[in-house]
Length: 185
Image 1 (spheres, rainbow, N blue to C red):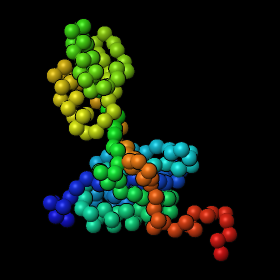
Image 2: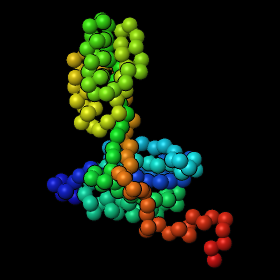
Image 3: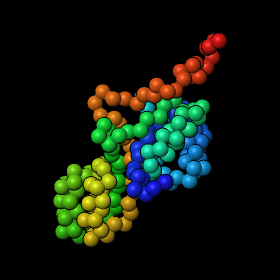
Image 4: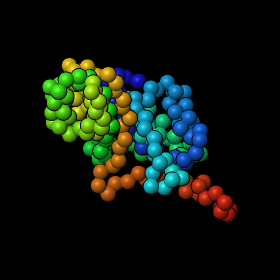
């Protein structure tokens, strides 16, 4: 794999909402020696289906191979690469910041307002902020808050959806393999 062709790829994977499925999916990446940069999982509008958003660095050929191998896993319903120009990517970042004086609290609140972050907890010695955005927004806010002292930071991992009328769909998946309990012969 040549380093000049390695880019960030965002994969959206619809899977059966069952125990062990996430382990199967993540093992596929570890077997291939790829580090998952970001991983977020949650149920969809159908409680029987979960969406896994995976961000990984790799070249196009390798990502196509990984996507094809994901499609072969039984609990995987659909795999789609979300292209940057056709998708929206966001993550939630929570910052707990040292704020032991009224002046510092006011400065931190001003920064939160500029970044459209929410103040979700206040104590005598700290403020906790929640920010939703892309990496550059989170990193910019983090750099500013570091001067006050970040006590804790947590990131959810990136989630993504395609823009507009585009949806996750996968014409390569055989529909008959999911007709469990139906006579397909």
